[in-house]
Image 1 (cartoon, rainbow, N blue to C red):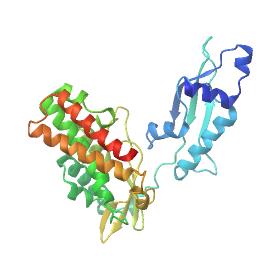
Image 2: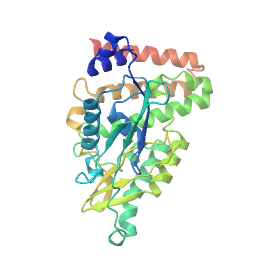
Image 3: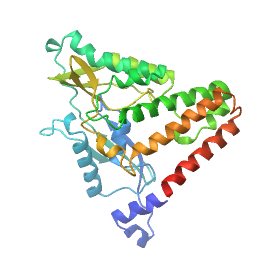
Image 4: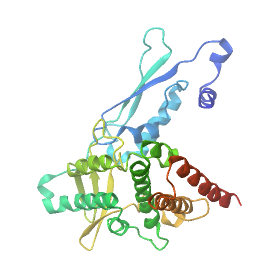
Length: 310
């Protein structure tokens, strides 16, 4: 309801004054995204079913956000992303919005890209997937490149993913389906399961690689039904260091801000500690029921929240 009122304030309130029901957003249909998954596009659009239909200015702003966020995927001279509100169906006031996302695809030139070059980024990513599967933090860290890891940012970010996988695995193996249900919503994840890892490994093997000097980008073509695959959506950037390709988050990730007060670093680190204690408690049979596990996590997280509120 709050979202609807906010949207209404953006487009005017004549319909309120006249007692006319406003048009609302029905389904958002995306066309042309051969390489980019739907969900990052939808996240950028900020259009949700049921909200009051935005006006032309707001829709244009959504187009501009798409063009800016994914600018490297369009030939902006001749094509750009567009939004179109489709006609009403009968008496319904719900309107579909059609999104054209004419991405150009990777600059893939087979004659200039040898098999060993192509296999480098792909082999790195697949090795990373297997390290996550085995819970091998050190092996997983070797697949990444962070310019400044003095603050152990990789230990925390990758450790978070490994801890989430281990908690979900142990809970269902030792406590059954009720164990999974007892995990807090934000920690109850399917994108770290064996199925999720397997799907991503297959898609990575089929991916295209664009190499420019010592940098590369892996273009993964996700298929309908893949979600929740591991690290679903988007592409990955790599950098070659001493002949080895590493996953390179440095363009979008600022390690200097990660552990500052209010940043994700301290929060992730504390959550990892609670997850590990929980897994240990289940394995040592100190937490024998879903209820005990849930109470244990709630108590530990209350202490964490209390620390940040001091």
